[in-house]
Length: 309
Image 1 (cartoon, rainbow, N blue to C red):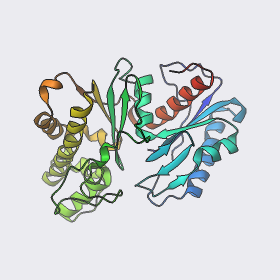
Image 2: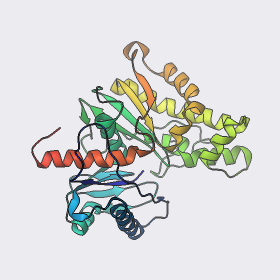
Image 3: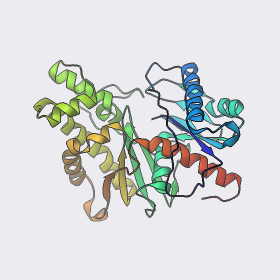
């Protein structure tokens, strides 16, 4: 869920609504190199400029969301399990190329910030934002701001162990077995379906099979709900959030895994302490990462101008 957003000088930026003037998309594959990434950025920026009649001088700031570990102060893409990209000084490179301030953050943290600025959590002080896509990640907003932890990596819900049976546990990119990311993300849905049926299919295709009544596809998504439920229940017990927001591509099949997820959560949370929490999908839809990049740039500009928010 990598995204880059250019914040321009011609749009009146407020906390709502979010106005995306133009979008350009490139798929991030596990084999993507940093050179390819920078070439795609240049191509996409050119397409956006052509479509909007904006130019580099119209841009105030750049926001970048990182699908993995990020170091916002130095602007470094530290590591991503999915792509293997590591220690990549992306902010420095983009700032040098476009001569604008660049603000980066972990993608899920950025999505959480965008949900606070533009989405369904404008009035929610404490919440957890969970992405289920090529990976599983979490972003925490506590007391109305991103909570990054002591080392900048809080919210890694994708690395909660949700499967200890060695016959079922899948090796995660982090090196452990049975992580929520390894068990419930899109690629793992495909792996579990292949193990069950011998058939190769994407998570989206498997969702389609489930909607048409395939018992095997339904079972795979039900197990996905169980895995997510375990990770979310542990998070709820720890954080006591007002809301849990789900985003990412797999969340678009929410109805397939939600019943098992809710059942697991209700079985594993301390219910008396968490009676009023809400779980819902993001109001930002497929644009959550772009909205997150915009939120980073806007917050960064506010910090520069002394209007911290």
